[in-house]
Structures are given as structure tokens and as C-alpha cells.
Image 1 (cartoon, rainbow, N blue to C red):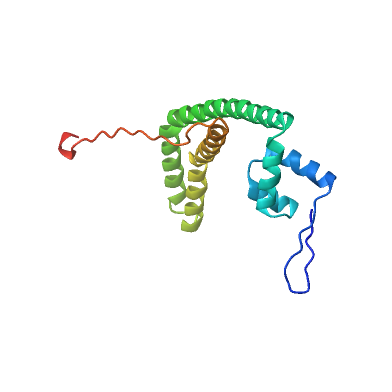
Image 2 (image 1 turned 90 degrees about the vertical axis):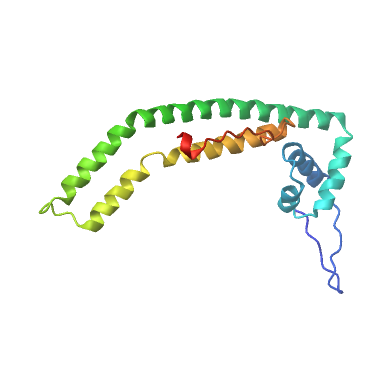
Length: 177
């Protein structure tokens, strides 16, 4: 947004932001706490964003706007986490119920395909098995990744820790198995 002109000696000359640009920067800063991303979006130095953010924070209306945006984000985030957890639980339950059935179906199908005279090459059978396996649990890992990412973002917005800092380790001797 802001362009810096080069001087003859190669250094850049500072450009003042217009009132319109400051308004846009203020709006962006109220919803985006990443100074580097804001700076890149506006084509200004990160230190400039920090300077303006300090100035903006002195205004109680701006501070309330930021808190409102953060509260709304947190509310939507927790709602999304709950729905994602429900979806993940449904998929895990469905996968557990169908796992034995899927294994039998795959085994029987590959057996038929491998039967002499079936017309299926080894490459075709391998491709089928790979495709079949990709339909199983792999998409749940994507849901879990999204769920974890959203949780981290919401926890950060709520000023909560994003990692489990206490651990319990239970060990079982091989002989006890």
C-alpha cells in the first residue's frame, strides 16, 4: 500500500501513511495480531506496524473492538472444535465397526482378481489395493490436524497453554505382556 521511493544513494525514503491507509491499518490490526503479516500486506516495515499498534491500543474503542473480535473468534473456534470432535468420533466409531468387514472384502476381492484368467495384471491389483487403502482412515488424520490447529489458535486467543505440559508414562515389561 505504502511505496518507498529510492534515494540516489540507494537508501529508501520513508513515506507517511495517509489517513485512509492508517484507517485500513487500524482495521487490519484489530483482527490480525501478526505484525509481520500486516506489514507485508501493507508494504510497510514491521516496526511501523508496531508503532501504530501501540498508538491504536491507547484508544479504548480500538481496545474494545480487538477484545470483541477475539471473543467472537474464540466462540466460533470452540464451536468448530466441538463439531470437529463429534465428526472425528463418528468416523472413528464407523471405522472400528467396519474394519473387519473391509479387511475381508479386500482379501476376497484381491483373491478373485489374482485368480488365473481373471485378466487383472499385478499392477492393476496393486493400484486397486492402494486405492482401497486410501479410502480407509487416512482422511481422519486431516480432520484431527484441523482440529488440533483450531484448538491451538483458540487457546492462544484465550491466553491458554497450547501444549500438554504434564505427562504420565506407564511402562509394561515385555515379559508381562
